Length: 432
Image (tube, rainbow, N blue to C red; front, side, top):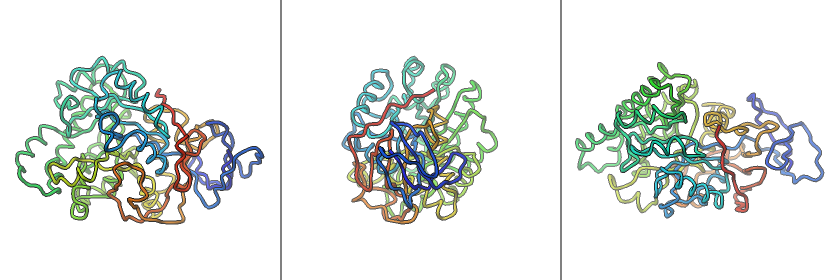
């Protein structure tokens, strides 16, 4: 395949107008003009070529909750959004807490996913041998709060053995469950959705982040803090963030805040919650100066019927894989950041953090996971153009640029001008 006349983002952050030759699932040549008579040619005139998005935190609901989303529909949404690889979370039914459950997910993904995939193991208070031995997995997910049942591991005496044994990456949902329980009692009976941000407040987030960092430092354990949502966490990490610790932020926590409850109600409800506008600004600053390492969507779909139940019966979470890249590229066009920074945050840095080789850059020898986007035209987020099974977005009506025109997975076109090629299959990611 020959991608002809694209504005190509090079690994050094510069743009180069030229051609890219793919052979099988690899990039083999980048040049100003490449002659390849036997190649399929994509005319990329006017389009920008970026590495495919590597989304390191999604909830795709299979097995057990397929009425919300499944691996096929979610991977279709990924392809439409320029996401060529994802890492999926363990809170499915059954939970991904054993080798057998991990194997089941991998088998399902192999037959259903249009894009590349990897899966977290979920920590419980009892499955430490599985957390050490299960393979292949990108890491261990710990719900320190905002969860219930076996996946809730909130007490220091339960957390410590997990940090103390083994070496693989630990990713934490950092919220202080005892504080959340106490504040639920304090605010009981209030059904306004915005109360969610007060119940699961900034202090709950900071308390858990401090505990996770304490244990990580004690055992020199690789730690990743998921979906950072508060300025006080960012400023805390600015003062004390060891080299083996990384963190991420979602587009929601950068671009939405508590004012969204007035506009979209429970569709704005997620964990950790949206914060004040002041937090948006501090998180942006932390992302721009490297305190925050990369971006994830935390794609967590629920049906509109579930969201309509009203708070607190409405579930927390929102979809995101289809809109994350256009959202961030629109911010780049506004001058908030550069396109090269977006590609680093959404492709290069997460692939590196999770030890996945040959992804996240456009260079010879790298995997041909690519997205061609249109940075010259805008269109609004619209339900009728979404592929996620839940069928809605908190960003509906937002006018965005940078929508994918082509998404290429392993050298094959998975998405082209609004249409999916469901014959394309992704591969299981390999973690070093």
